[in-house]
Image (cartoon, rainbow, N blue to C red; front, side):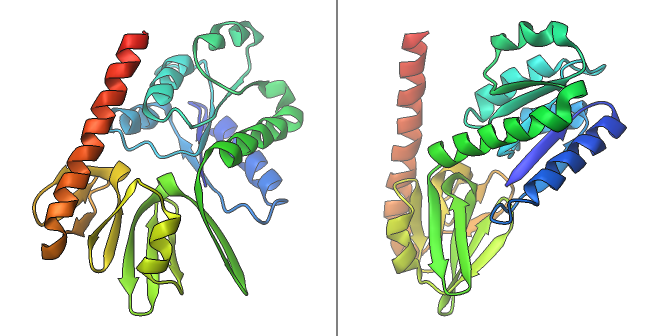
Length: 246
């Protein structure tokens, strides 16, 4: 799980990260990584559409850019990402309702209220995010499907490459495929790709939005082409419906 913390004050940002890490270490089942970002770096990730946070703790009053403006971009690019506002100014309490967020925490109350906000975000993620859940004698894995880039056959195991880290599991692609849902495509004898992460397509490979490439096998070219274009068409249909509702 990637947790972004954005603040233009490095000391405040580091302290916030420490508080989150201290709290989540009490929950050993949660695999997390805190990422500290200055507002200009966050804006760059949003502009390039490489934003990959599971949740974000966001300051409001920042010299470079207003946190509410950044939250609006996050709502658009990653609508399932819970936004937690963390600020020193109570005056912003009414302004944040222009954006989708789950908590408004004053820095003076951070030790008390931030854990409650984190718990609420975890509850939302667990309720809404479809996951690949695997149980083994010595290991339990629960990976959000949206965070999986692709799966690759590795002899009698499968490598699951994700935004957070890679997992090697003693399962075949045939066994894992039914657990993934319609957003995944078997495009090669040794690969299953997440359609959501594809940025470019050719007859021989998919290029993902992080620059990774996934090959397309010769016998899978027709189904890969039709499935990918059907996926793009469905996105355009959804956009059209949203425009009609506005």
